[in-house]
Figure 1 (cartoon, rainbow, N blue to C red):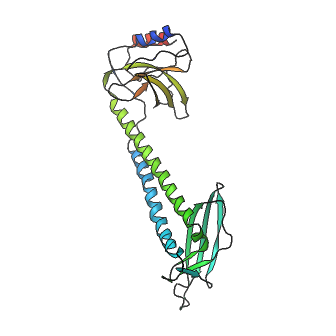
Figure 2 (figure 1 turned 180 degrees about the vertical axis):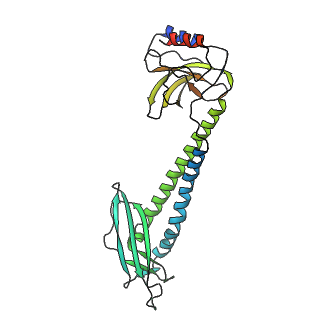
Figure 3 (figure 1 turned 180 degrees about the horizontal axis):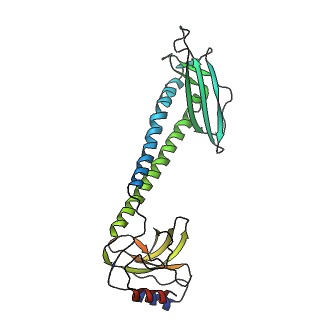
Length: 275
């Protein structure tokens, strides 16, 4: 990896900062992420169960309605009673719920009430709803609005499952990188210094930055400890980071320089070069 010169300040001073960085093996105290452990695993497992739950909950109703949507497979049930409503959320999401009271056996007076609840993405829907009975399985009923928006219901379900799945995958990748970073802590390595450009710092102390590594522009991020801040270089928006050998990880140096096991003399030299 090659050192990155300062982009918007004195190259000589930038070179001084990189030159005074110690070339010895340095113990890493903090590699850029907070220990999350089993809490992260539990959250990811919980999120991964949501798509499964949604599929198990919604697919049976969709499959029954799909069968009834075919020509001649359902008729309007005149004797059934229906109570419910559809409401629009977030402009294009429609949430519908209905209570259908009907006779599961048309030849017997016994009535039962079933509930139907689903949502779909759409801009319009009918306000007049009929109850439909299956001609193949007379004990099954549904609503005309559920049949009319069957395609939207399927697309909405798939979209939500893919969204939640993407969140789980992204979280798992982040947890893996956090684990790999934590494994670096306590190890002594010869680290390569880089001057990086800070692009953002959020309320959780997640810092995003860019650096030039081997002539290639890379984007990276680093979660600092509570109360820490990057070691800025003359308040220029540039900061000091180190590259970990044989990895793609960059570790930001905090302003107190406690992330690495610097000596007091090394801290003084680095602070003077950054000032």
